[in-house]
Image (tube, chains in turn purple, cyan):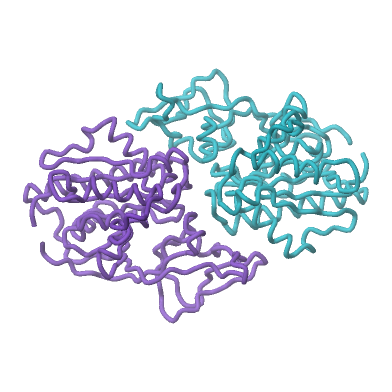
Length: 297
Length: 297
């Protein structure tokens, strides 16, 4: 594997996820914080109009605009669709400006601590994830596999190396100092690791990694007219990454009836009660807890 | 004081405060829950378009649209401005349909527990607030005085009796079952008290009430271009209703410098880090903790 010459830190992909957006503003003011000797670091506020409006998006969720066919479709001209094409041109056009590693900063109302969202199992990403989870026990690894890069609609589809960081719980449209600091420390961990990699040093000797492999998304039970009639059960709220066993409470109806998990095997839910996912019909995502062997680079 | 014949429960005044909006939907489905023998209870989803969009408002904050001069101004035709006039016609037009008591349901990202927001010190409101804080220690009373009703822009300006309920912490755009249940219990407490009042019974013998009297709002320190460069200090986050003394930390700058409270006397902040107040230039509101004597009705 070659040296990493250019790292892009992207924030404000969702305009109401302030932690990442204001970290980008901080790094713009104090660029020395993200400067390392062996590579260039660039920052990008990905959705400035949505950030100004303190909304997730203006026309369409930007982090669903990166399907290859959509990026190539000249008829898609919504604000975020154009923004996605512009970001691709800036970060993923072969040449000097191409990013070798993309870190995309997100936040969630779910209790996901400091989550790394992998979209592939490139050994470099795995080793870096292993290193970050070693230095901070709050770090969890969530792995969303895609059949091919072309089918990955996220910013991170632009580059094989890199991942999203998802921190929570935090409401949309606010900053929490402690989470802001923890996220920044995680970013420093990423940059320091890349620096050491470029210097030919290896930080981690871990041969396996615990990850939460995405299985499926689960909607709220709904009435015929499509409206919800229940909430995340109090016993499941904030229990991201904890085992949910058959028979365990999942939802509580507005008139206080418990709906239990009726699957046949244990799952590990994440994104429990994420605000932005109500409109997507997602109450949580199920994962399977796995040990993954890390291949050599 | 006369009997209370008609109680209005208003929710979804802010479309992304789901607790109140979905309680209104629950009560529409199970009207027996809010039925009491001696009075009629009506419900109102105040801002249906904003609720459908999961946003606080479409054109303008509805809970700032009730200034008397604005309600009388035929030139104000924004969605919420028209909605305010419609709500006034439904709830505050003399006659059969006039509400004698209005309860307006809100939620906040601040750690305000179960807060009653009084906009006057009518003895009935005070006695009811005292009763509610007696049966549930999570209940706090926040008092925002207005020079006159004409200068009160809230839904509650429509009626001398009643108040807003503000529950938190909860992110915008989600439901949390526990807070949903606690809010519903508080509403039942209000309705039960009104029923007993109409029956000629008095629940509380309290002669004084602890309340947090609004003093002023405090903005985030800002750069010349109007952007923020600091956050609520971790030591102040979630400390609503707790004493803030001169010299105590208030803000933390993005580069980790602490800004302390420089006032001369102790204050009790509320609405610390409310998401909707970033655009209003409000980091928190200062209050003074007071004991108020309750006059007889």
